[in-house]
Amino acid sequence: MQILIAGGGIGGLTAALAFLKAGHSVTVLEQAPEIAEVGAGLQISPNGMKVLDALGASARVARDAFRPRAQELRLGRSGARIFSIPLREASQARWRGEYLHIHRADLIEALTGCVVDRAPDAIRLGARVTGFEQSEAGVTAVLSSGEKVSGDLLVAADGIHSAIRTQMLGPDKPRYTGNVAWRAVVPVNKLGDYPPPETACVWAGKRRHAVTYRLRRGSLANFVGVVECNDPGDESWTAIGAREQALKDFKGWNPVVQRIIDEAPLLMRWSLYDRPELPRWQEGRVVLLGDACHPMLPFMAQGAVMAIEDAYVLSRELARGGQPEAALQAYEAKRKPRTTRVQNVARENAQLFHRSNPLYQLGTYGPMWMAGKYLPSVVHGRHDWLYGLDVTEPD
Ligand code: FAD
Image (cartoon, rainbow, N blue to C red):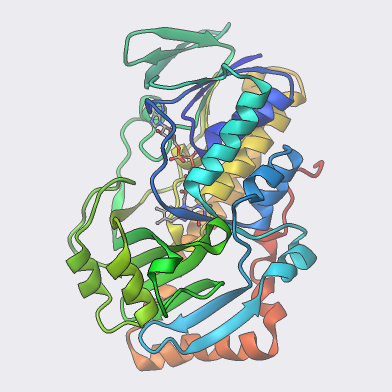
């Protein structure tokens, strides 16, 4: 088949790789004039790495990534550790895959490299898809230039503000969650005596929490700081926020957190919006993938990983033969229950780290401390359904 993919982000590129591997022709239509990623980190859990492994991309992806030693929860002000559970070796042993921290730019570069190795002309930059037309015989992507590109199938991996989703289902109605996320990446050598620990570390506090981890073999520190805020802003990767505001939001916090904010070359401010489950993900020969169909709050660190899983499952459903429309329906039926569950758990987690009442803090963190100290496998066990699944295994 000739498969068109709108969007050359994490989901679109993984899908391109999976389709090329299965013998299809692929054209990725990416709106950006060049491949340049915003500075932000991602956690790729073992369920995502198993897919990248099956597609032959894991070594390239892992090359500049960082392997966190442990998963930690600390109190934001004092830095007191509530629990620290081994992750590096435990991830392989328990979930049969690596747990990596990676810069988005490095992931995009690795995936792009894998795609162009197989098909040097597969990615078209500066190609913004504004809509689609379809018949029983095929589908056409319409570009902002007026050009039309035809194929057998159109995969919409065009992200959270998907133009194709809007044409298929109408405009969405995102609900502001009352939280904004600060994001920054800082060289560790700028942080003096206060580098973040070599762990996936959550810092919990009153109506706010932060996440720190290392990127690029440990040389960069990634920061996400989530704060409850009544003043919604842009839902955008590139919206810049004021350092003074970020410092105010984390005033009195541990020096590790404050130092990152002080030294950040840029602080991005992403307002977090939530969307309900979509009624459907496909229409004839057009199908949604990744954030286009299941945008999720970042509190499970699974948005990119779910897009990676989607790509593999879609490619496998197509490989079964038969009518493409049926394959798209089967893909939706397989993926939707899992991505909806992740969306729901992410929603629940939003409140978990923002306890303000000391009694609630004790009620939440006390059992976590006990479990982390005496029964780490119980804490790991909470993620078995998520990290343990291998979507590349025959079903
Ligand atoms: P994107 O990566 O957004 O890619 C969409 C692509 O489509 C872009 O390249 C865009 O330029 C292009 N595009 C858009 N519109 C058009 C158009 N009309 N025509 C052509 N091209 C178009 N996920 C994780 O797995 N782990 C994490 O640790 C994690 N942390 C996060 C932290 C925060 C604060 C946030 C906000 C998100 C986080 N995520 C994380 C989520 C993750 O970044 C997204 O879920 C993921 O990028 C989705 O991939 P995608 O391919 O669907 O969309």
